[in-house]
Image (cartoon, rainbow, N blue to C red; front, top):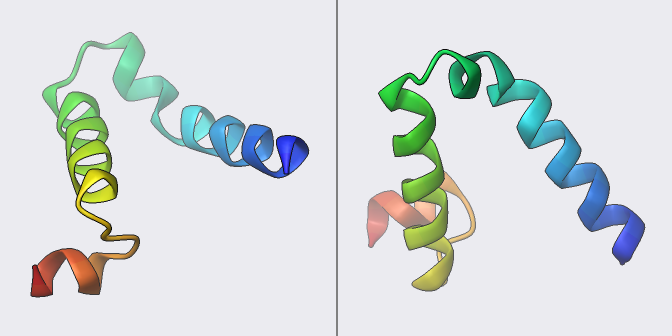
Length: 51
């Protein structure tokens, strides 16, 4: 589980690294959407849209 979670986090930061470094609002929005949707039990875009 620990290896799986670390690989997911690494993929996430590789994907959004350019946005984080340039202080773009899209990176902040992506993190907030992921955090809020996870808190409400939405684990994919369709669940989030249905919610």
